[in-house]
Length: 372
View 1 (cartoon, one colour):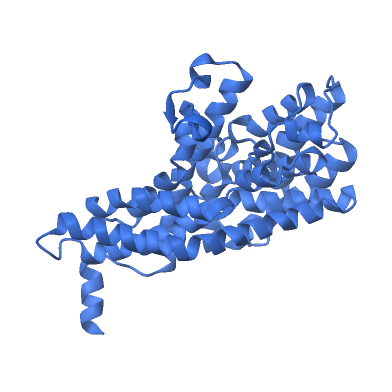
View 2 (cartoon, rainbow, N blue to C red; view 1 turned 30 degrees about the vertical axis):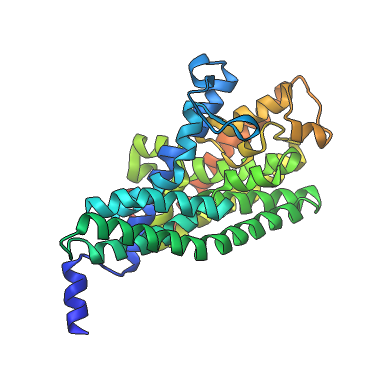
């Protein structure tokens, strides 16, 4: 046992909640933002504002019916798995050969994990990185051994772990679908809370909403929940993180707070309670529908994709929305007021007020929301 401890110390393999649940998770959120989320933002800007460069096909794979084309944003989104895996490896202080090998591991994990791809990448990349670190520079043919071990362990783990995680994410998505069958009040509350939670967790709320084709009132409730988490955390943590934190969380991703949530889950309560309030207001009072591309239901204020999706749904509903009975409308002042209140004003005010209360009773303490 003593030799094993000495070996792990020499290899910088630290099995701890901080290393895996805080350091790795925080880095993974940045990797996801720099790939999938940035890609979605670029695609949305290109589509909504007719930016020719962003709409151009810059890469083509395959031929005939199997041809796949990519825009700049599409390429960024396609690299989300590798980006997250490399970010995790960096947080685990993996040596270069291990770090570079994680590109393949991340791609495999994300592809096999479906809607649960990001969570699969987290588990698999940690396993592959630590095994890679263990064998790194232990042989005279390190240039062969390290990448082979890292890739084989990683892809093997992905083959075993990723599909069940994807199934669990799909089950979570089905739970969201079932809530849409309830009355608008309860549906609005449940969908808002569940999708908001999914947005902040290391799973893809955008992928879940896209896979489920979440549009209409359910889509509007999903937008409300996502905004409650993103704008809510941005405002709630302004004292600790200032304007940089406001921007990175408010139009980036609330997943940046996951390492802090692991340390103190109570900091999530203001955003969750806010989403439980704004969801029913969206569905019952403003009848807010998100009839653009379903992926936008799970984007919130990330690059304003959720709001652009609502606007697109007003003037030119997506095929999924049209199939569900949506029609183009001319938005009224009431529609615009509802969108602004649900997306920005209410999340900011309510989460801030809840934050004051939780800070006063000691559930949220100084530094609990500090981003690394």
